[in-house]
Image 1 (tube, one colour):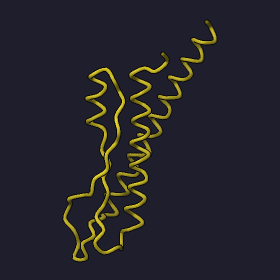
Image 2 (image 1 turned 135 degrees about the vertical axis):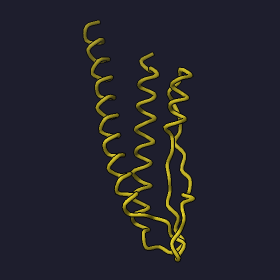
Image 3 (image 1 turned 180 degrees about the horizontal axis):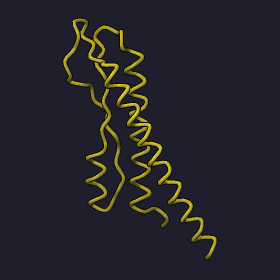
Length: 113
Protein backbone atom coordinates (compact mmCIF):
# COMPACT_ATOMS: atom_id res chain seq x y z
CA UNK A 1 0.00 0.00 0.00
CA UNK A 2 2.85 2.39 0.77
CA UNK A 3 4.46 1.51 -2.55
CA UNK A 4 3.95 4.42 -4.90
CA UNK A 5 5.20 5.08 -8.41
CA UNK A 6 7.49 7.71 -6.91
CA UNK A 7 9.06 5.41 -4.34
CA UNK A 8 9.48 2.58 -6.88
CA UNK A 9 11.03 5.00 -9.37
CA UNK A 10 13.44 6.37 -6.77
CA UNK A 11 14.42 2.87 -5.71
CA UNK A 12 15.01 1.90 -9.36
CA UNK A 13 17.06 5.04 -9.92
CA UNK A 14 19.19 4.38 -6.84
CA UNK A 15 19.78 0.79 -7.94
CA UNK A 16 20.74 1.89 -11.45
CA UNK A 17 23.04 4.63 -10.20
CA UNK A 18 24.70 2.21 -7.80
CA UNK A 19 25.28 -0.22 -10.65
CA UNK A 20 26.73 2.62 -12.73
CA UNK A 21 29.10 3.54 -9.89
CA UNK A 22 30.39 -0.04 -9.82
CA UNK A 23 30.82 -0.07 -13.60
CA UNK A 24 32.78 3.20 -13.50
CA UNK A 25 35.05 1.85 -10.76
CA UNK A 26 35.57 -1.34 -12.77
CA UNK A 27 36.35 0.68 -15.89
CA UNK A 28 38.93 2.80 -14.11
CA UNK A 29 40.48 -0.27 -12.50
CA UNK A 30 40.92 -1.77 -15.99
CA UNK A 31 42.18 1.35 -17.75
CA UNK A 32 45.46 -0.38 -18.65
CA UNK A 33 44.04 -3.84 -19.36
CA UNK A 34 44.53 -4.75 -23.02
CA UNK A 35 41.29 -5.71 -24.77
CA UNK A 36 39.07 -4.39 -21.99
CA UNK A 37 36.01 -2.48 -23.20
CA UNK A 38 34.23 -0.10 -20.87
CA UNK A 39 30.95 -1.06 -19.23
CA UNK A 40 27.96 1.23 -19.66
CA UNK A 41 24.84 1.16 -17.50
CA UNK A 42 21.52 2.46 -18.76
CA UNK A 43 18.13 2.73 -17.17
CA UNK A 44 16.92 6.32 -17.57
CA UNK A 45 14.86 5.84 -20.73
CA UNK A 46 13.25 2.65 -19.40
CA UNK A 47 12.55 4.38 -16.09
CA UNK A 48 10.89 7.36 -17.78
CA UNK A 49 8.73 4.96 -19.82
CA UNK A 50 7.84 2.96 -16.71
CA UNK A 51 6.84 6.09 -14.77
CA UNK A 52 4.73 7.25 -17.73
CA UNK A 53 2.99 3.85 -17.65
CA UNK A 54 2.28 4.21 -13.93
CA UNK A 55 4.75 1.61 -12.68
CA UNK A 56 8.15 3.14 -11.89
CA UNK A 57 10.03 -0.12 -11.44
CA UNK A 58 12.82 -1.08 -13.86
CA UNK A 59 16.06 -3.03 -13.94
CA UNK A 60 19.22 -1.28 -15.09
CA UNK A 61 21.10 -2.96 -17.93
CA UNK A 62 24.81 -3.19 -18.50
CA UNK A 63 26.45 -3.38 -21.92
CA UNK A 64 29.95 -3.04 -23.30
CA UNK A 65 30.87 0.27 -24.86
CA UNK A 66 31.06 0.43 -28.63
CA UNK A 67 33.37 3.46 -28.55
CA UNK A 68 36.59 3.23 -30.56
CA UNK A 69 39.47 1.40 -28.92
CA UNK A 70 43.15 2.19 -28.53
CA UNK A 71 45.79 0.07 -30.25
CA UNK A 72 45.65 -2.41 -27.35
CA UNK A 73 41.87 -2.86 -27.74
CA UNK A 74 41.02 -0.90 -24.57
CA UNK A 75 38.49 1.92 -24.88
CA UNK A 76 38.37 3.31 -21.32
CA UNK A 77 38.73 7.09 -21.32
CA UNK A 78 39.63 8.51 -17.92
CA UNK A 79 38.05 11.91 -18.71
CA UNK A 80 34.75 10.25 -19.66
CA UNK A 81 34.79 8.06 -16.55
CA UNK A 82 35.61 10.98 -14.26
CA UNK A 83 32.80 13.11 -15.67
CA UNK A 84 30.35 10.21 -15.52
CA UNK A 85 31.36 9.53 -11.92
CA UNK A 86 30.79 13.17 -10.89
CA UNK A 87 27.37 13.22 -12.55
CA UNK A 88 26.40 9.87 -11.05
CA UNK A 89 27.40 10.95 -7.54
CA UNK A 90 25.25 14.07 -7.80
CA UNK A 91 22.30 12.14 -9.20
CA UNK A 92 22.60 9.54 -6.44
CA UNK A 93 22.67 12.25 -3.77
CA UNK A 94 19.59 13.90 -5.27
CA UNK A 95 17.64 10.63 -5.54
CA UNK A 96 18.68 9.65 -2.02
CA UNK A 97 17.46 12.97 -0.63
CA UNK A 98 14.19 12.64 -2.55
CA UNK A 99 13.69 9.10 -1.19
CA UNK A 100 14.35 10.43 2.32
CA UNK A 101 11.67 13.09 1.80
CA UNK A 102 9.16 10.44 0.72
CA UNK A 103 9.91 8.38 3.83
CA UNK A 104 9.70 11.47 6.04
CA UNK A 105 6.29 12.27 4.58
CA UNK A 106 5.06 8.72 5.13
CA UNK A 107 6.27 8.79 8.74
CA UNK A 108 4.49 12.08 9.34
CA UNK A 109 1.23 10.72 7.92
CA UNK A 110 1.48 7.55 10.01
CA UNK A 111 2.29 9.54 13.12
CA UNK A 112 -0.82 11.69 12.67
CA UNK A 113 -3.05 8.72 11.96
